[in-house]
Image: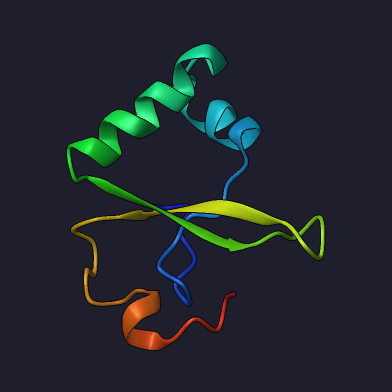
Length: 79
């Protein structure tokens, strides 16, 4: 929650940063994010990549933290 941008309501973190901040083992990170998404606690959204012009990256939004503030209500300006 502390890593989310207030302008997008999303946390744009690489796997390396999630591991650094959380201490989760890299081999378990994908399963952990999938579990949170399946439980309805986090939404995984695609956004423009900061590394490659044609690429996309995943951004994470907490499901119950300002739930009306997302791409569908404010437009897809980040894409």
